[in-house]
Amino acid sequence: MNLGSVARISPALARSTTALVLLCSSTPAAAQAEPQPATQAATPPPASSAPQEQPAPVAPASRPLASTPAVSPGLPATDPNGDPVATPVSDDYIEAKFGKGVTFQSGDGDLRLQLRGRIQPRFTTSVPEGGDVMNEMIIRRARLAFNGRFLDAWELYLQLGFSVQDNEADNYNPLRDATMTYAGLRDLVVRAGQMKVPFDRQRVTSSSALEFADRSIAVTELTLDRDVGVQFFSEDVGGLGGILGYNVGLFGGDGRNRRAENAGLMWVARIWTSPFGEFDPHVEASFDRKQEFRLALGVAAAQNFQSVRSRSTSAATYDFSTFDYTHLTADLTIKYRGLFFLSEFLYREADRPSNTQVVDGVDVTEYSRSGYGFFAQAGYLWTDHLETAARYGELRPLRQTDPTFTGQREVGGAVSWYFLRHDLKVTADYFYLPPIDPGAATHQVRLQSQLYF
Image (cartoon, rainbow, N blue to C red; front, side, top):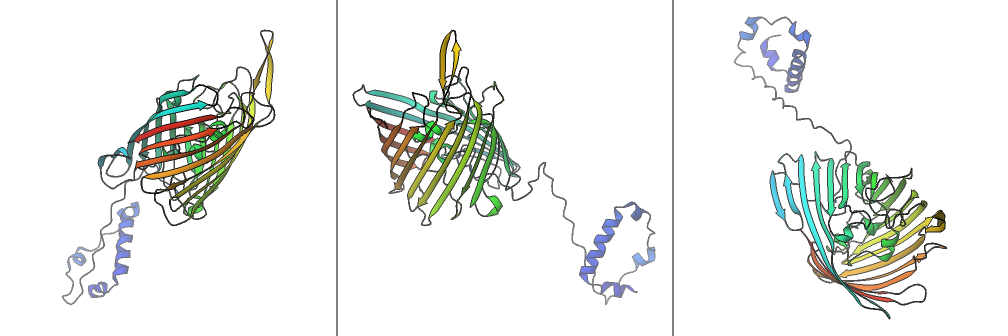
């Protein structure tokens, strides 16, 4: 075969031959191959021959990452507290923006840090029927949050709380959240540390994103508070576009960063669906006023074994008693054309109503707190800034339980002015709080503002 015939070989075959030669040259056998005659390499091709096609340059291998996400990776659009996270960009930059905080990002996108803070001053007037007026001015919440995201799949989140009500009465602990998250698998995200227990919708929703000054009385009494543990979850099971999600977790069961004195643990499982597509059910108020009807349904169950807290993971700590608590909840969220609707049912039952022991020769009884409750609230955004909302709820004890646990209703309304959505707002609400059984009701007025940089 002369060189003119070689020149007529197809370009695809020439490239394949070149790649094979390069591959072989990297093996020991290639080093032993006989050299081609020098005269053949020096002979110029005939003038009539077509020029040989040069092989395409081989691109250098990309830099391997320390951790490669396996299936459709991606951290959630919100942090573990339910607040939105700054959207990544392609540049190396530092940005300070109201409502997003201060964000640092490396040019290669492997590192992104976000720092945010918020404050909620509140004025409250309570007027018990037949009682004395109580006026209170407090800083309801004062928080700092740090979010770090690395290599597209890792997250570190810390949140500190500094107000009196951000901390427990018997255990000053400003650390509210401290979590590590790995999101290398779309259907199995792993989060460990101290976090909100993934139980009911309104508790998981950030207190910065509420229509009222605070959550329902049913949630305050019957929810599961923050705890230390590990959870596995997904916000897009099967890659269906956020239609289906779940949470499964194992926690210490004693609340925020408490030393355990028994073998008790708590498990929790939650499943939810948004059948009409993904949206933001953890933000109360329908700011975008979309024409599409959006709905989310969720149910959850939990069991806390040998709990030493009167509300399972929060409130008073028992001196000598432990109780096994069973928790159930269901919630419904709707957004449509400026309308926001949320309803929840919560249930908690202990394995026994009380425990009595003799202390210094005297019978001392400690009570569990079993009960159920529900609420429904709806708000409508009249303009980009003005919203009105209403709420009705009930809280009822079960059978024999703590004598201080009494039934109550809540009937109230709220008016909010959003300067910059939830990041800068003023909310005023009024509640009529009558007991379930005959008794004196309370009238409550709250005025609260929020600045969330």
